[in-house]
Every structure is written in C-alpha cells, then in structure tokens.
Image 1 (cartoon, rainbow, N blue to C red):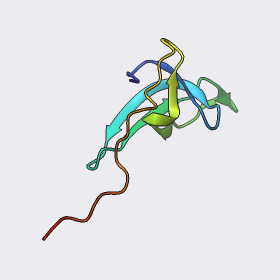
Image 2: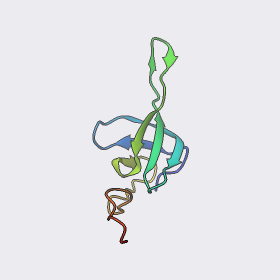
Image 3: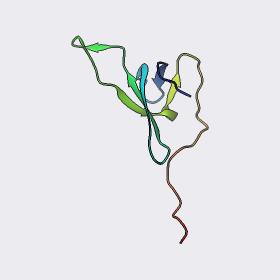
Length: 78
C-alpha cells in the first residue's frame, strides 16, 4: 500500500518521487500523484499520475502486485 509522503518508483518508466496525492475512482481505480524531486529550468514540474499497481514504495520495499482492482466488468443480468 502506498501512503502519502512515501518515496516511490514506477516499475515501468523508472520515474521516482514522493506520493503527493491519491484518488479513488468510482469503479475501483486508485491513482497516485507522484511529485518528482528534480527541477527543470529551476522550476518544479507538475506531478505525474500512475495506477497504484505500477508503483513500489522505496521506503518499506513492499508491493501489492497481487491485488486486482477495476478493469472490465460483467454485464448486469436483467
């Protein structure tokens, strides 16, 4: 589980930073906003948003890769 303030890394792109925001969408998608620690031309860049499953915490080395949230839904029965 990623918590606000955790140092995290995206397993696909390698992007690293600090978790500064968490959103939970209606159908279970949990997105984490990551603020990079690098400056570009002396300015802070906007946070990048990633699905929680893509991230690993660099603070406690845990990763919840077995949890499935969101995704395709079955058609409701009538």
